[in-house]
Length: 75
Image (cartoon, rainbow, N blue to C red; front, side):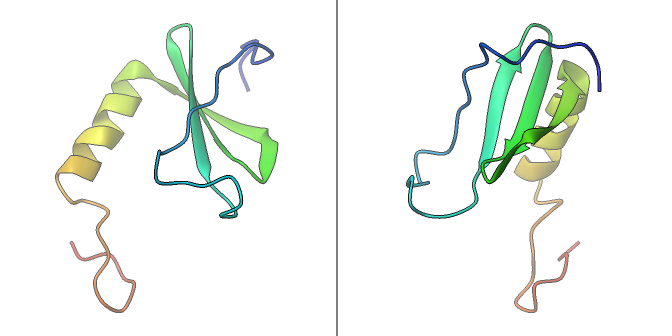
């Protein structure tokens, strides 16, 4: 992991996620990187560049990660 200081990161979660709802993906914008973690394991953080994050969001918006009725990738 890179030397990014996450001590003052402001972690965001979907407005559709309730505190008592279980595991939730959290995102923080730290300098020029985007940090992503699972709320149940906050020490395990993935870091992405802006270009990587933009590519991921484009894939989400294009349905690249949509699942079919059996829970398999639809594309």
